[in-house]
Image (tube, rainbow, N blue to C red):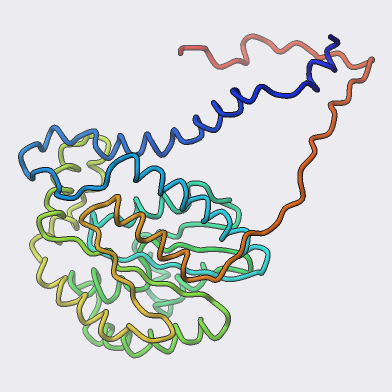
Length: 307
């Protein structure tokens, strides 16, 4: 068999299957990472009653992620503008849910916005300005890992803004979000809700995990002391910014796996999408030119094969 004939031969289906299985490794690695440090905090809490079975979790997650790909195709095809806001207490699981949503999507048209504290220049701007600069164009999905609702939560509780600033925020937000919706933005808002005990456990796990200790900031520790202040701030925020044009949706998040599945399932229901039919792809034959000679690559350029 010639070189060209060998290259053109059909690929062994078992090889394709193996590659597909390998593509799931990232999710499996994240799942193992979630549970890696559990022995260090053994005894803090018992086994969660009714925990979702691992096989069911992965089967549903991969199914929902396939639907997310269809949704993204629909958004791109119809030039929709989608904004999804994720809010909640520290360690509520917002980041984990966002990772599972974006994991299989095209990053060119789906991006995550997680802004740090405003700098000196941004503090002199209109409060919403730095957030609105990240609004999507047609065909894009933007996920906010915390958003302008910082003002109603951490900024208010920690004293980073005045009470006048907070009240102006509450007066502005409903009108602002109505304008976004009228302009064609699909605006979806999630609040991830966890219990006092669950947050304590997750903070303890971070404290025992050397590669996650960076997530446990002094602000997180202070938030434990001010739990009730955060609760009051959250309750007022939900009451004053839950409007028909952009309602809040509360995700019960003590069980991270269920929270992820429920959030993704709900997100898919918010947009009436259809699968975009794609024409079958026929891979072209490899072209061989008799005068082509591949040049050798110096051994010094290769990354050492340590593994």
